[in-house]
Length: 538
Image 1 (cartoon, one colour):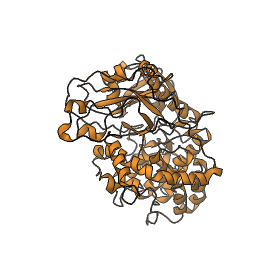
Image 2 (cartoon, helix red, strand yellow):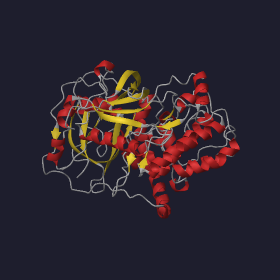
Image 3 (cartoon, rainbow, N blue to C red):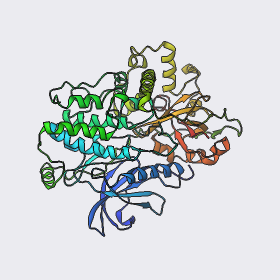
Image 4 (spheres, rainbow, N blue to C red):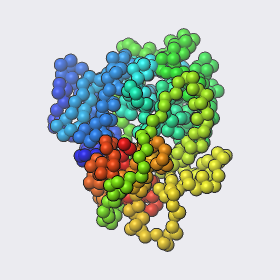
């Protein structure tokens, strides 16, 4: 990072913001890294939504993220079931903005808030959204965050796929990244929990989960009463097929759902287009339903239902964990130039063709145990933030075949102490423990997983292909009261330590820089405030 990243500031008065050709009106959504304003495109006198990111483009990582979203949305912006991109640009303070079509019908979450959707309407809605997904796949774009909240309804009741903020854009000669910047447990495909290479079939699983949600009123990984299950419970049941024998799911739909949501990616519809065709084949048997997925009649019905006042483009709010001030942080630690461990090549994960299905199946099976360990580590974060019950690792992985040493190693990694024995409490220096980073300088890491705005990564052998390396460590400033990504990136010690210059001095020629903070356990139980600066290997 080469400039000062800041957490989302309080929304500015619209008079202080100048978006060319747009008159801003009010705030209609706010998330962890962006604020969405409603406005009017003056030349056309039409309503628009303006998303303003809080992360300046002078930071290389933010620039890449912004370009990825714009490129992904731009490739399919003319599709009738995609929220259209109208304009984009950069404010004087280097923050990017995107002007989009405004959808005032709320999202599919708002629609289901009144109860499950009639089967005919559910099939029609998902068929339309799946056609947008198919167009994205044809254009080389993976959405990677398909969920009801990202399917909006415009003023005519037509569904629109939105939020390509973590999309993967296919580039010649490159494989899609396996890094997850967002994971929505209810709607993420099973392989996402194992950091497998993303593909169109993952989006298909998520769209199938959306159809399940519309029909039942709950996500496929929730209890029958809609109760939230802990992440370890979810991971433990990843190999268990989703139950489709509920009376609210018509018999005609069950085969489509079973294939779309198969545990094995190779058994699913290959892309959004194939899913669209399957839904079209059963739509006639469903009848017309109560809604038509386009046209003024739907707008009237939505207005009568009170759904046309929903916020467009709302983003989830990041959780923040408050903590009191700590002692003055010690000086950051850097590895001397030339002391970098090895020089492995960057990770390159091949995209498997259908002919490699047998090998892929074996690989997925081998990753089941790894996914369980990863799920538990992530569950420590998400469980504490959302109030989910998080059992011990041994109980969470019951029946997985892991031996005691594997369980202990995973537990150590979850608490930020992998590779070392935890000292007795009476021998621990509190000040030293508070400054212990999550990963030491020279550590190599796999892909990043971010849950509720908090990122983590698993340690891997530096002799193997890896995604990140730790080039510096330090302790958070006493004034920093949380551990979300935004709060870490705004910390003055992080800003001074995790620089591209420091990464280059470490030996990484063209670094993309990020920061990882303490685990939930270290933060809340041990009071740890250490951080690790990480960069992509050369």
